[in-house]
Image 1 (spheres, rainbow, N blue to C red):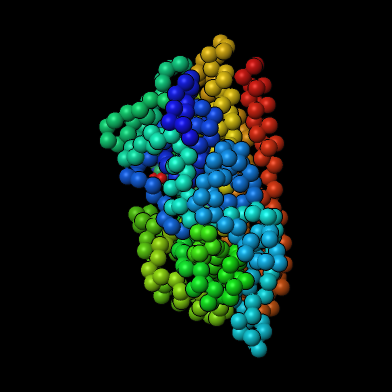
Image 2 (cartoon, rainbow, N blue to C red):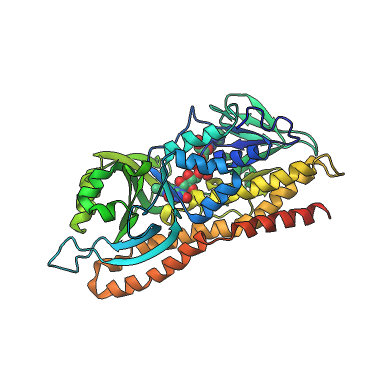
Length: 450
Ligand code: FAD
């Protein structure tokens, strides 16, 4: 990417937050020669070395945002989630019994419940830290400013700049602000207003333990075929999934356990967890799963999972400010599609901002009209689908962790609900993102020419 991308742009965009969605949105804008700056509160890139996967719709959007982002995935070691199976080059997700031991002659036997097929390289997994390192290289070198914690945004008159105020007392100016500042978003508060009850994160009663282990260890517990392909092992009140990352040299393992207790408001949501606790929770599970758990590090990250399910946002925009990614629709991770949904946001925003940039100075409309109309269209196009993900992710967790898995008389009942899981998964994967873009540009054209 050239150092001067966006220098001649009539539109300056500020992005708050340098997570996955902020960086990808910036790549889409820079690709379209729009001047963009990311303001990040942290001292540097913040992601851990745990895995993240991009579904077919998200990958299609990434390619339209900027083919260099697709390249960044490759350079960062992305691999198909189950492409290592020689007899099936497609990436398939497999849901499998992790708990019941139905074949007493083979305690390691696990029944396969469901398979969904994402096609060749349909789902790719990558370590988060590797992804961010590659994404930042796609951008002009001065794009990201660290140690800038947003505190307030003040919108000026029609053609005046917006002023961003930071915790260190400094300010910055932009024509438009996109808040990609995650579940605890400050930008969201500004968009919704101080009296709003919407956008309050609540506890999903699930804790996750994400980690990576060397692939040989996963293979020794699960065997080649299982270890090198995505599997989601289901049981009562918990599930555990794994897939290859880092060119297949590492296995990303995430454990999800239900916690019926409330999460105190002042307790941090990111803690250090103990393998011993996981071993205790999974003591009655299939021995293959217990073997896998024995290879997890003694201590590992634990995240209390919060989402925006209880208090969804009624809108994602206010004037020339909007929110995207988790700031707009933080979901629990059971579909593995939260970032993918943010990537869809990023594509619409990139295209609409490019249209807005072309309109500026060519008619009688003010900057404010041109940009706020683009954000209004973004809100119309993105809100319903992305909020559905928040709701559906909760539902998926309930299906994964049914108490019925522990009761042999209810096994069949539990299994028959998984058909729903397939429908919900394909709704995400088979999304017509090209149609989304066409609708967005058409709506914007109509709105702006009125
Ligand atoms: P974040 O990653 O939260 O980034 C927000 C950034 O904003 C941070 O860098 C933060 O420091 C910064 N910030 C916050 N406040 C301010 C401020 N006031 N001023 C300046 N900067 C600020 N999704 C998938 O698509 N596929 C998966 O496989 C997947 N797996 C998951 C597994 C787990 C266990 C979990 C918990 C989630 C998973 N997700 C997955 C969801 C995905 O991780 C999130 O949707 C995604 O990371 C959100 O990215 P974001 O950029 O919107 O927000």
